[in-house]
Image (tube, rainbow, N blue to C red):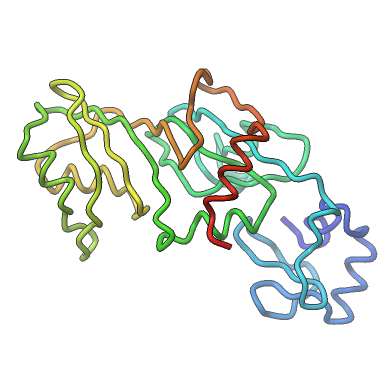
Length: 231
């Protein structure tokens, strides 16, 4: 998204005024002085006079979506099935983290960059819970190996909680978010993931949210979520 559109949608100032701020060198993107026509990605840090855009200039939005298979967790409008177009929320939002295209379940969306930064810091150890179906029977050896840690991407995954749910299904709770982590862990142990659903992020759960539907977070669960973040 163009920087002047990005800032105008926050309600901080108009596109024309944004252009004046750019010309005066008062806007930075990720620490670099912004140039006219610059593009902004959802994860970029935009500052005006060294300060974040005031949250009171925009209405904070916190959504939970039960993502269907096939939806891509990107804000790029040119990508078919991108999550932002799918949700079609009336103001600018972006996804916190990712679920790959072939996976389904809970993902959070917001316009609050502070929460995004805190939740994306893996060292904070925030729990994410998944239900996984695989192509071979889940054995004690498999669950023990998964829980101890598996070598993928030249690292050993952090210890995690793994419980067998049925012959071909298990529950796993992670506190890190490596790329395609569960699929890679299973593959390293000779298993193939047939279905992967995220059912919880910290204290937020799917509850009775139907596939493809989204809802605003309730006040109580939002307050608990924020209290668990390390500011």
